[in-house]
Length: 226
Image 1 (tube, rainbow, N blue to C red):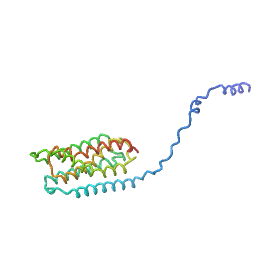
Image 2 (spheres, helix red, strand yellow; image 1 turned 180 degrees about the vertical axis):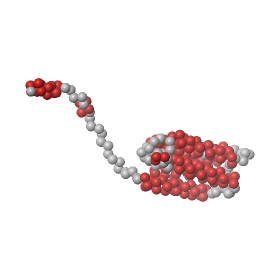
Image 3 (tube, rainbow, N blue to C red; image 1 turned 180 degrees about the horizontal axis):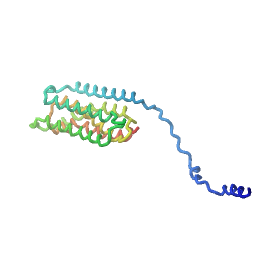
Image 4 (cartoon, one colour; image 1 turned 135 degrees about the vertical axis):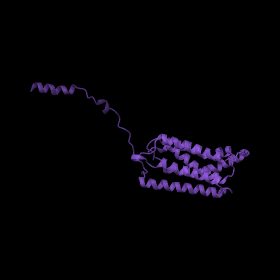
């Protein structure tokens, strides 16, 4: 019995291995977000509504500026239809989950951004008449301003609806969606402006694509991660 008492009394001399943990200050309190996250069906409805609203805005702005006279010619209409198809397929790739419910990977997003830029540049080259005179700087600036105004609403809606919705690669996912929003505006300005000179189309008509990719990457990095 005396040996047992000696052993028990010796336990008090053993240092506590977790004493340094107990000395740490308590973790900071994290409050629950004041705004509840929407459910998946609710978010899908918001995304569809944002896409329709953005498309309606681009159509309205194009109608306000006026459609080009040769819009119905195959040389103009066919590239616009192909670009519109690229925009729609790109949105499906960027937004819809793939196998096992996972979103598109970084490689697919990078390829999508490149496809948007290269597809638009290829359209500008194919539809160019080849003998156009370079437009003055003021014309480039006017078309750029109109194109950016067409892209303003889709940009804002995408940033609002898709905040805190990216599980991975938020910057690339935002860049892809921003480039697609810009492509929609580029289609709108090209349906209005009849100047087909390559430099004008690539720079003035394509400026919302570059702006959308950059702003989308920034918005995704700052506010996109779920």
